[in-house]
Image: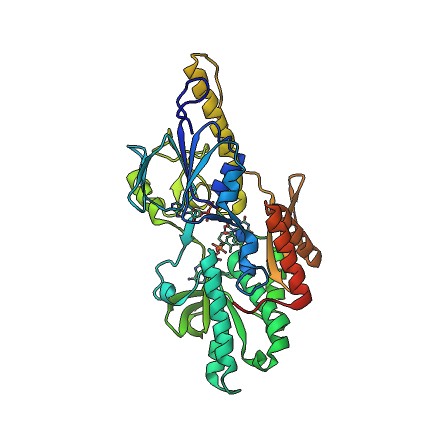
Length: 440
Ligand code: FAD
Ligand code: NAD
């Protein structure tokens, strides 16, 4: 790429960190011919997270929900360099980043879109004994644990107490990740396991543990009640509400059950444990926060209304789950709108710099980012979903089978590549015709 633009002005270097919802949305909307663009991410693909909970039980194949970075950058207007690497350090004073292999790269502008890591609240035993559900590797790990335990249990005599333990699937966290995964697992057991291995039926259990009095707190009350009733109908999923997990060992969770008159501890046995209690900042963000005297923020990088990082407003922007800003939630919806907004901001910044270079005077405003809530969706099992549907600025609750078809069509629309849309549609068709792929 040439160092200068056609008018002789120096081409500025824009480094984008991450290949998730925020960074990919920026990349797809950016005029990459205006900057020397470098994308850095350890993950050489974009992951469509809304369908990740469907993958550990084989409803959706992992390859159907990933889009390679290389195909995305090929479609960009200007050249984009991609390094498959992690950023280890960001120096906001010298304006450079250090990669894991020690390589140092200078930037004029930096966009931090590195997402978050799963939180454990430092509860003892969580990291050693549970699986998260955030990345492809997590989904593979859960799948392998589920199938391994089913095979181990099948080899045991009926009535052997170990069978019950191996087949106790416990999910901690009643947010959308935990609920959607528990619902997918329940579907798999009802529709596939009970058909092919009915002898296991009496020993299998799914427990969803939630600290708050209700699951899915971001949805409205009627939808929460509908979801709780459907999930727990016919004992398919045991909901343990008001239960705060305090400790985990290799066999049990210790849950503090909050009751009106007294609190008590309960031991909850498990064979496979999935931990979905939300997000925490990555180490790279914690280090940046302390350099910028933001260490009081425990939830993420502090940004202003223009998504500029507080303390480094002139050169660093931050988007998505790695940030904290009132009114902006850690969702794909927010991250992708932020990415699109930044693409427009970089166009304006380029125009401002071009006018200054050509010594022309014209005022160009940088507008604030305005988040537009477009509704929320969650799959709750048995071909049913719940949704907050937004039409003409008003939110309407919706639940049931029709909402499930809305959920499916919304995700098919949101999948950006034609290849992914076809693969996901084929996966759903295959499941309805032949059941799930329960081999690894
Ligand atoms: P991410 O998408 O997490 O991307 C972060 C990127 O940064 C990754 O490419 C990562 O590899 C890279 N990275 C990490 N460390 C470094 C480093 N040191 N240097 C460089 N790169 C780095 N939201 C919704 O709105 N709707 C949904 O239905 C929905 N479903 C979800 C289901 C699941 C199972 C999960 C886990 C989340 C779901 N979310 C959903 C939330 C949504 O996925 C996140 O809000 C979204 O991914 C945030 O986008 P992001 O770009 O900030 O981070
Ligand atoms: P979350 O933060 O939404 O929910 C975590 C849940 O874990 C909370 O309800 C919390 O009370 C519970 N919890 C915390 N500590 C606990 C403990 N010790 N014991 C028992 N329960 C405990 O996390 P998430 O579900 O991973 O979602 C993360 C983000 O991703 C959210 O912003 C969410 O909206 C988004 N997301 C959206 C969708 C969707 O829209 N369908 C799906 C998945 C994730």
